[in-house]
Amino acid sequence: MARQVAALPIGGKYPKPLIHCTGRPETGKTQLAISFALWLAGMTGKEKVYVWPTDGREHEYAQVIGTAHTLAPAANPLDVSAVQDEINADLRKGELKEVGMFSVDTVTHIYRQASSSNQLKGMTGQGSSGHALKAVTMMNVITVVMAVNLPAFVITHVYDKSDHKNLEKKEERDSISSTEELRWKLAFNLKIETGKDEKGYFVVVRECRERPGLKPFMLRDTEGGLFRTMPERIMRALYERERPADEPKGWKDFGLHKPFPDQGEQFKKNAMREMMNYFVEVEPGVRIYPFGDPKAARSKKNGDPGINGAANHAQNAYTQVTKEYTAAGGKNLGELTVKLKEYTEAKVQKMVEEYQLKHREPEAPPPPVDEPAAAPVQTGLGLDVPTTTETAGNGYGGGAL
Image 1: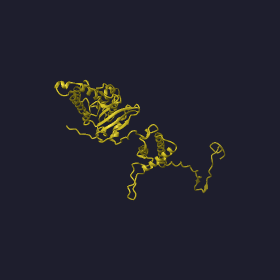
Image 2: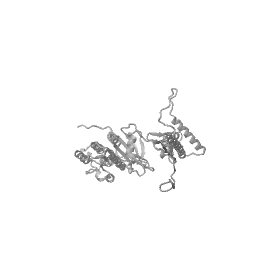
Image 3: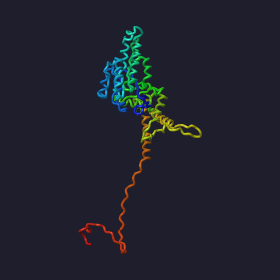
């Protein structure tokens, strides 16, 4: 019986992630795979992960996800045919019903095994065993990934290739061939790369099938974060149209040691853009921008299409702050960035205070003061009864009547 295909099956929000992850050794690829497994478990309710562990790192999955929720083939992980047969048998038995993600960690060792094997040439007595066997092996790996019909995370590596004539010269190479890489594009909808530098770990999103023409962008991990928040950030950036700005990014990240990008006129443009787009959300749906909403409709006058004034106001502010800074002998872009940020934030803070004052709830009126009771009047006799004040001498038990 045919099945109905959901357009956004993962949590009703995102396309099923079929991820090719690459990167240099020790840049957190396995941790990112584990983070995706945890994220998918929360999104789908399927807590198990199936790991094809050619790198011997299935225990890392089990330590985080739990032994009861981590499955791996009993067959030799480098024997692709044996693993394929076992997974097909498990699928028929329904063993993967509670699995939320399928991970191949890593293809690199499978590819090396196929590259060094001479089996095909031995069987046929002709042809280049290396290329043919690698192609068949990679096809079988992808066949397995497609057969399980689950979100998948498949890992390869990037290495340095040395020039034998010039040992100091190195070029990057992938652990699979460029031909296989092109074939993989038909199976995967995401290509990402992990990395590490002096600032920490990061992920570069290289390609996305649903976002043709995507310009690669970087997302940095929090210190000691183990990529745990990265899956949600990647998916939101791709599918909720919240693509982050090019590095360096983030208003809070700019400062003395990380000025607004570039120099000269380009520095000015980038600084103005950041200043113009900075905002404070005073309440849900209400944002206060220092120079006016940059996305507001242009004003129209006498048939002129008009302009959005935010850019002009931001430019005037930039000119004012820069003029004062350079007049005092300043020449450092980091220091200028700090002054531009301080000016912008102070302006926003003043606007926030004005907004809060304007929209502050009126104070409750003071409680009414009790009026002195009117003198009681004895009706019918035409006589007013004088009011007496109770003192120690006219209360109960004392004083003359």
